[in-house]
Length: 177
Image (cartoon, rainbow, N blue to C red; front, side):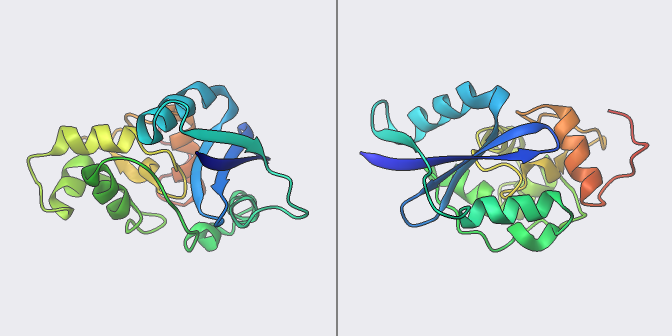
């Protein structure tokens, strides 16, 4: 049984759940309104009844909680070196690793990301892998946009994607949703 620790921090969009493991690897990040999605992803990645989610009881915030709090306060590089660990397929992990190479303040299209991993025809599969990413913000799926430049497909809502990209300086505040 995989033991995971749940910790909550404040964010510009309400409480953010941070899930880490015993080795302090970040396993997931999700806003409270989307916790059901998180449990579905965990069941898919680890198996039903194969993980246990318990409250984090550390004396100080976890490394991930500290870094994400700093990120929201404007220290954008605070999340860059966080250790992550996920379930998922080999292809999903390949896409998620590529996401971490997108610099702060930049965006890529789904097609660009497919080309980057050497699978230029796998645009839809890249989109699906992006949508199954349990570690949003840190594994920056929000930095992937549609071929037409539109902010498409963010599991936690396009409003959050817009805010994150604006926060990172990738888009102007005036860009409509």
